[in-house]
Length: 451
Image (cartoon, rainbow, N blue to C red; front, side, top):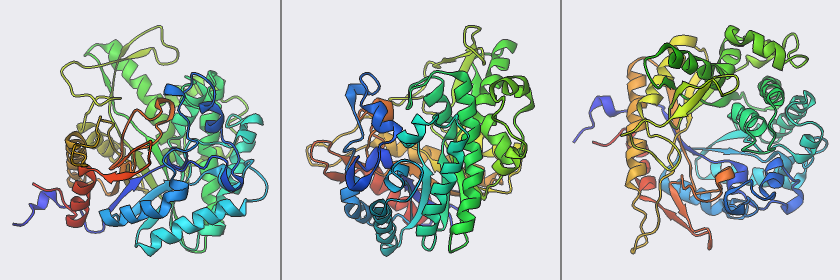
């Protein structure tokens, strides 16, 4: 039986999975690794659910060969992972740690030996604690230290790694780390949040140049953004304006400088206040360097007017009668909306990749040792159908990465949320392929959604 043409993905479509260093590696102080802000933050009482830390995580540092073999068993053509800055440069600046570089050498070689293309992310929330002590991302110097780190990585791995990602979700680092304080470093300071956000974007552009200058093969360099369709809770003008304000801070604050070379003009007054002394002449030209854009999508946000909320005067709502995961509403059409909006509003010359998409739902080993995670399969199927809709509407989506390969440490939520295609027993660290992993393997092999 042939697959209907509408369910087949374009030739050359990139399939993969994604992880991050702090969430899976463990080995928090092994082989000269220095402390990151997440090492510090997670060890402070009350910051993570159940006092969980990434000290061991799922021990990928010692089990990477097993994990790569599982990727090969799934038939994964690509793997997106992040490198730990403090494993490579323990204090964030100065000479590289040879043992840290050796680990990523071994990982890349193991991937290539199994015909898996690496997509390397340089930063996924884990700033060196020494740089935080010197001011962190609100300090402009951190952006230059990040470019130095990018140069070290490209010089060492740029003969084998082609695809680079500078940052994962810079606005999460900026706002959850410096405004709400839910993430490391746990600061609650609006000015620090906006200045961190600007320096994160600036460091992307600086790292872009550093990678191009050091890599031994022509690189493709992107950034991944957490993007969320923002919908008003009602037809009222107040809710509509509230949604527009949230959209500016959630989406346009990063999309506009990266794809237009300017911050949203509606935020000019706020940014003049918050970025006083931080925004230098020429910064926006540096930021606007991009070969491809990673879109991380999980859900939409539905907001209502709330005058008691600073900056946006908007508060979240939870539409009744809808399906929810352990963390968010499950809303597949939002992915189509995002992809078509980016293409319509920005016409980017950069390619577009869905760099993260996944769902936390309860699952576990059944009596026969199998993990029947039907809700995850349905989530992935429905979201991939929205990617196909976007492609058929003319959006050049080049690839799709599931979050995540493995169940892992979910930041402030500890180990209670399972996103993986592979189940991890956190006591024994044994790995078990879930039904969703086997389903995804069949999708990859067919380059098409099954009926």
